[in-house]
Structures are given as C-alpha cells and as structure tokens.
Image 1 (tube, each protein chain N blue to C red):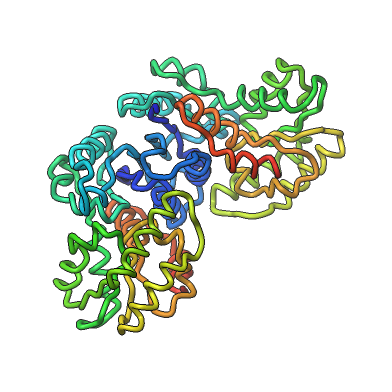
Image 2 (cartoon, rainbow over the protein chains, first blue to last red):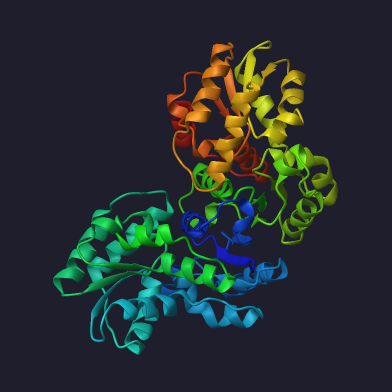
Length: 240
Length: 240
C-alpha cells in the first residue's frame, strides 16, 4: 500500500472529514490493514477564494511547498480535499513527481457514470471555484449541463461556507435556499463542489441525488494507494 | 504558531478523533487561525501490545522513523495519541530534537489537579500499557493510588480495544463491566489510558468522573504550539 498524502487544512474541519472517510472506508481488522497516510493541515496557505475573487495573496507557492513536504515525507500520491485549491492544480502537480488526484475531474466522471448525457447538474461551491468555472468545464466535457446558483443564492452559499469554517454545523438556510433554487430550475443532481459543504448538508434527506466530491476523492485515493474498500460501507452509502 | 506533529495511526480511528479535537478546540474564525498540523498515520508500525505482552515485532525503529519524518517535515513538537507507544517514549524523544509530549505524564498531572492525594484512580488501558505499569508509576509519583481491573476484566478491556480497532463503536459490555468492577472497588476517577476507548465510552453518562488522555494531550499540544483554546468548548467539556 502506498502512503496517501493529504494536502489539507483548507479548511481543517473538511480535512478531518476527509481523513475520517479514508479510515472508515477501509475494511480493516487491525491498524496495519490501513494504508499509511501523511496529512498536512497546511492552514497558513492563503485563502483561495479571496485570491480568486478579490485581491488576496496568491496561494500557489504555499500549495507547492506543502505538496513537496508530503512527497519528501514519503507520500506516494496526493489528494487535496479543497475544490478551490484545484484552480492551482497544474502548479501543484508540476511541483512534485508523484501523482496528484484531480477531485473535480473525478467528481465530474462520477456524475457522468450515474446520469445520462444532457443531465442538468447543479453546482454548490465556493465563489472562487464558481468564478473559475472549474466544474463547468469538466461537466461540459463529460456531456453534462452545469447550472450555477443565481448571484444572490451564490452569495448565500459563500456566506454559509465562511460560517462552516468558523465552526457552524448542521442545516444552513442559505444552502437550503440555493438547493431549492437549483431544483426549481430542473437539475437532476447536485455536486457538492466544496469540502466544507458535507459538514452542513444532510445528504440522506436531499430532494435530488447528491454527488459529494469529498467521498469521490477518498475512494479514488484509496484505490490508487492499492487499498480494498469496505463493501459494507459501500452498501450503506448506496442506501443514502 | 508551531506546526503540531502527530505521530498517529495507532490506531487510525483514534488519530482521527485526536485530530478532530485539535480542530474543534481552537476558537477559529478562518482556516488561518488554526495551527498547521503534520499528521503521520503510520499504520505499519508493529503492534505495541503484541510486542509488550507477547512475541510481536519491536516497534521502536518504526516509531523513531515516523518521528523523524514529522521533524523533517517542519513539526515543532510531537504528540503521540497512543498510550502503549509511550512504553517507547524515551527512544522516540531521543530520535528527534523537538519536544515530544508525554501523554501519560500529562494525564496523571491532570488527575492530580482535580483530585486530592490518596484518591484511588482506575486505569482502563491496553494490556501492554498495564503490564508496563505506565500509568501506575506516574499516578503513584503524583500521590494517587492506581487500581487496575482484575485479570478477567482486563482481558475484556483488551478484547474491546481490538474490536474498536476493527470498527466497533458505541457502548461495549466488556468496558461497562470493567468500569463497574473498578467503581465497586472504590475508585474516585477513571483514566482512559487508551486512545481507542473514547470511541466506545459515553463519558457524559459515566458514574464516576473520567479523565480522557486524548483530550488532555490535545489541549497540551495546542498550548505548546501557542494556540488559544476555545472557551466555549472548555465550558462544554466541563459540563460533562
């Protein structure tokens, strides 16, 4: 089994969620059945959204530095449980010689696997991810029709994400409104394109199917590391 | 803020629990308010209990290697959320030039802070930790009276710990029996001296106060890293 490198801390609670999934998904009887994992909660990386949407500091150099720490520490691959950080994906991948998983590509492929071409896909994501069209490009390339929330709803989504980063948990009215708006406009599925969102959205009670980027990335990282995924967990997730 | 190094993976779920507490305890408004954390879930470290109680492989060299990975990756201190690994504390601390927190010492001091000298303290821990007397020594040095479960109850505790490592969660009859036995023998407080145990013991409903080594270690790591701890969480924990 390869050591899974996790370039995290964006935010830290989303990284805890991702790490917890890596552990839960493995069908392990003992510690040694789990893959090694080197996780860098690199919280001092400048905010991605503030750089992508305003005049915040460019996080590229810090993202590259963190990726190198993981490679030098023995990671065999890198997963980045932050969608906005994928705006810098090329620079991160160029900084190391180990594979870096592309969560956005993986999520788009996962949607396409479960839904037919032409399906409208709602995108819930931070405003930097939205502005850069990270999901739009990948979903369109997969033959799907991306739909963003309207401007007001998107402001609400971003406020909800800041609130989650500040410790808020549980259903958030702003997220419910954005989902309702997307559903009213006919989306057949919603992508959670921000790793804070699973902390505040009850996926089991959603009115349309949800594809959760964090879950997709966890499965892909385990697969690439050569780990068998727990079928019981797979069955439980499918029941959602 | 220093980077908190976490020498983990013993087991991985206990490490998730420890990392989650590091994140939750910080009174953070944004990602950058959290300390950086470099966490190595070094799952391939040979089992500590099997070495301490039977003929399992000596984990010392792997523990030292993992500590060096953290130091080289920029950690300013190391926390080890595994009590049994503290049987090798000296060798780990010798392998690096950054401070390594001693969870067992910290937990003993925490008990002494809240209870008067002469108090009987029940120890719930893995059989390697018990056999090596890790808690007995520290509690006695603090003027407290350590009490271990009887032989049968201790076998039950160890079986429960293996079950937690294999994914079991929630109340475990074997742990309840061991706690009842210690309470019948007059302990005034119980120390959770194994980081798997908080995953299967409801501390809020315990019949005697519980001191949880994982919580003590998380607070000490944040304090040493120069981080302010969230008072709201402190209040909530005190209410337990």
